[in-house]
Length: 63
View 1 (cartoon, rainbow, N blue to C red):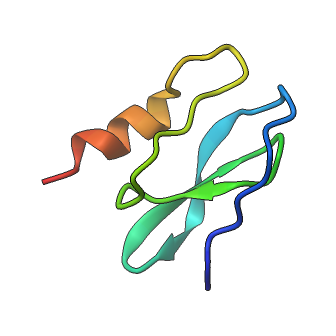
View 2 (view 1 turned 180 degrees about the horizontal axis):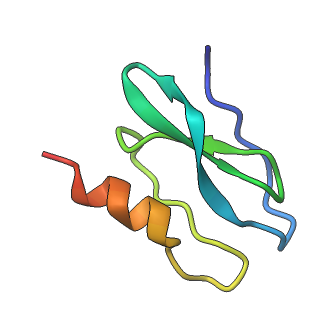
View 3 (view 1 turned 45 degrees about the horizontal axis):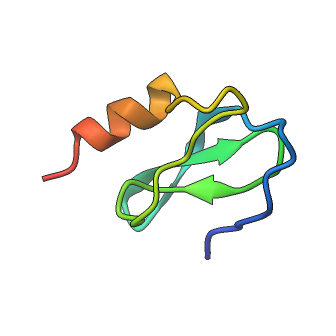
């Protein structure tokens, strides 16, 4: 499985899913359909420009 990354449509709302990728929890945007795991070198933001709580929790797990 590979990550899906789409252009933001000002609808971004990131949340944890029930899936994993490479043993890491997979987060997905309900607005644009992009996906993210904490090993990625970029950080998702939501439609308000802030880092969502679920993303912050995952970032706190980085070694």
